[in-house]
Length: 407
Image 1 (tube, one colour):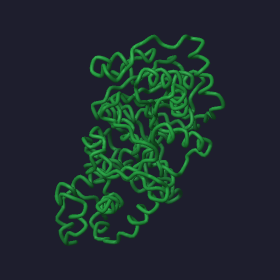
Image 2: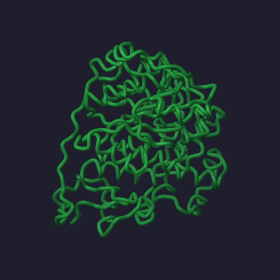
Image 3: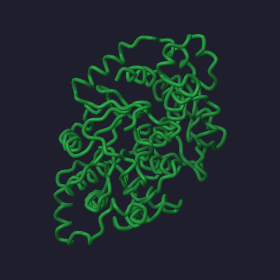
Image 4: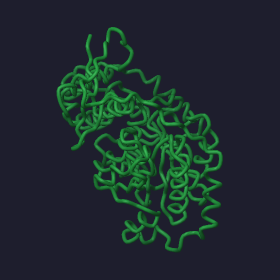
């Protein structure tokens, strides 16, 4: 624990992100060495975002020591990338989180057939029931279910897994002591009791929209495969599925009606190469040869029994209506937005990305190169721009601004 405060200090430097932390570690070797380095040496590091060097010169450990005290008080485990229990699946990512905060008992992920289940908060009855059934059967057959803990698909998948009596894991976009949404505060406790709540954000951190796209790389990174149950075409679920593919994870998707808004994303994933699945066995068959001692063979539950458990899992799950978004016809001239009249409409990162992508389609790497914004902040901003209808993803994972900014 003596070195944990230096990891927390490094993770808290503004503008670094996972990639920036890697650059620091490549140069100095350890967070402690980085902390005690001559401040002038920070200016020699290439590729650091603007402001990161100044943030590194702040040598106060007060915040880190306060975080450790909070973890002791809340009985939370602090896991850094140097610890033996840190999952290798995450450690191998180029933007692996420097620190994880855990409430509950952390599974040995590298020994688990972990499957992430993701999908829309505004899920349909079909989606909620499907997510609960997959959560139930995957867990009953020996897989470990991972999800967020939002309304809709996340909640249904977790409750289905809990109905099977197995451990579950939820990765959060805020502190593990800050339930969000408030309606799921009892589910927080159930997940922590049966498995673990995990976050890279210190206790007390509020859940913010920009945190969730960043959080999603951990959900996919901990899993062998990611299952998308329902999703709109431009959504956080799609970002998670694409992250999974980039990380070398399997991507599965549940098909739906071609004219159903909540199936547009999953149907598109299948068109892009995701494996179409109709039941949990389609996923398990991909892993049973490689994990024979982990997965349990056997017939699914009798339909009546399975249906009863699914109904119990989804009973009283609050469902959020999908937000109404202003549609922009990309075939017409793009709308101009005055920054003088609406200065608070976009963050600085979103403005820079919209400006960079105004002239043509760019990949995320090209946007990072042009804007010099850290990767995870670019991915976070792109997600919010897509969700709000200001940018779109085109074939080839290229992004285009749907609006033009003017002063």
